[in-house]
Image 1 (cartoon, rainbow, N blue to C red):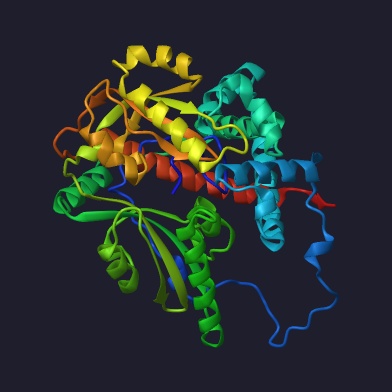
Image 2 (image 1 turned 60 degrees about the horizontal axis):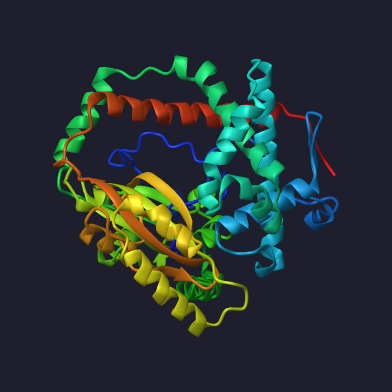
Length: 456
């Protein structure tokens, strides 16, 4: 898995993450794809359907005009490049047919983004250039570059500063629209809050699993073919050819596709038996599959696990400084190992976080601060190391030839309190967020239904 300790954004939706209150223990995820029954509807289909004419999606270029606003093929290509980079791949390494699917998906997202900005404008909601620039500078560490170098980095991956800023504008505008038009209508009663708190008390000590999935449907005549496909996907993930989230967002048929396959925190009782059995036997960071379900196969990735309302050292909140050096192009493994040895010796002698900038200057290293990261958010390889460090100490060097060599210096740690119930206000806030998100999805469906969209 990637050695990035500050995760870049949701694959299919945005690079700018708006973090809400996450209690996790209140999430009830469902494996919707395990139910192959079709929902009832009032559409009238003839018994014997005949298609008149021919649909060839390859003829359509990935451009559209949305209520007069133009989305160009360049817009789509630049957003695709940004998504690919966030998943540690380049577009030229992605099979052509998958690139086309990703382009169509990105086009749909750009249409939604345009509709959100237009709807916010009807409420006279404006996002100023200064606000966009501030947010743009804040996301630079997600790409491991300084804000002043972010524009050049975007160009180097085939994207642009304009594409990222457009995405930021859409996120900020839509968030403000929801704050003005949706949040005031949301009401959560004390009875609901108390019921959730009671369920949490009853579940104290039970295990929860943070899972991601890749699901492919498999009718009987294609079962072996789909099984072989998932085996190949599993091999690619284990070799590091492509990250799990790439396949979860491009080929998975689950409803979690839009969030990179993320099921969130779940208990085994909410999962199909085959998935529950697999999850209970997995270690954090492990990928398992193909797992046969009714109607298809799944691959699972265990991101993390925990016990409900039980204190865990990995819930400690850290203040860190990260030093990074980049290897020159064409460096050999032997040369990199020699440089890593020198780098490791230098960071080992760091005398507290006040000494980091001085050492970084001597090494020609970049420094990135993170004052609020939880241990469990780090890659599994680093979690145990960080739990053993004292304030002022550094990790051993880690990284790769492509992404450079890094080390983390521990500047502070706030250990978790004993497992406690969330407060009533926290539960209420979580419920309100869920209902706002539901209303937002309903509003977006209405906007799509009423939009005038011309494809080119």
